[in-house]
Length: 366
Ligand code: UD1
Ligand code: UDP
Image (cartoon, rainbow, N blue to C red; front, side, top):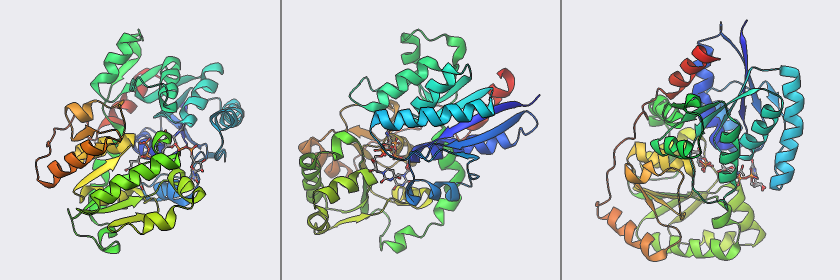
């Protein structure tokens, strides 16, 4: 009998993580019956549909259409709708990825419905419970039966939490599968021409963490730092809807738009975004995934956070932790512009074969 698998995705980074799994599982049609479920946590075309198109992900079999809400409201709505779906589907396994509210909500429901859970990107810890993602990671890992780990710190964290080693699989980084697989297409993106940019003559900024973008004072401080940097190098800033909301709510758009050398644009699809990053001089971000992608692309990355759950990007990669320390940020941009940034190396098993390794584990064990 074919095993039934439900793959869950809800937010932008999830789509990038499920693509390799969907493609790899297709090769095992005789073993698995796969259902793709989209919670609808992200719903704008540029936050959702564009990734399905860019990455050839089939349309979801089940769409929960949950949209935005407070943590409790969003998580609860997903749980209610997911319970109904899972009762109908009766899967043998639910696969969740990353650390968003959809990951947490579906893990809790699967666990209470007696369905096994596979967590892709298990074991990451920022040790900062002020971040909602840290709570999502801890709960999801504690409920999971297959913990697929992407960097060594994940192994150490799970060991410290006394997770049974039989459940832990060091498989590498699934986002990097997507990156490496799409490099030829990324090379053909016309985004540089569209934005009138020359390779290495601009930097890229993405920020969406509540701690950086929800308060108008903090966001203003950040734009002040960016305006200093933009005197030295052009900045392209694709705005996450969360950031756009604060900007609109406070009537900041005109003010920020007038900063010379700073270009705010809509969020980009995956192919255009990675092309933009790949040809940039450096990136400033608070994203999880972008810390990893810049490490593989060997582009210097300044992370505007106080901590990271992805320490290998600092110890081995091109990432620097800068918080909102203005002096440090300006000093490091000068280091980069003087071509003195660290070059970094590629972390173990970030080789484009993570999807294969995960599916092999499922073929052998499910
Ligand atoms: C979520 C994840 C975060 C992840 C990020 C990736 C949680 C707790 N947070 O944060 O870990 O890094 O996605 O991008 O799960 N909005 C839109 N259109 C959309 C989606 C969101 O306008 O398609 C706006 C809404 O105003 C919404 C706000 O963005 O209230 C936040 O969306 P939400 O999904 O709650 O959290 P993110 O900040 O996107
Ligand atoms: N990304 C994108 N377009 C953008 C910004 C980001 O395609 O305008 C991609 C990026 O390359 C990475 C993923 O979205 O693969 C990261 O998503 P995000 O930063 O929203 O979430 P996080 O990784 O912080 O959870």
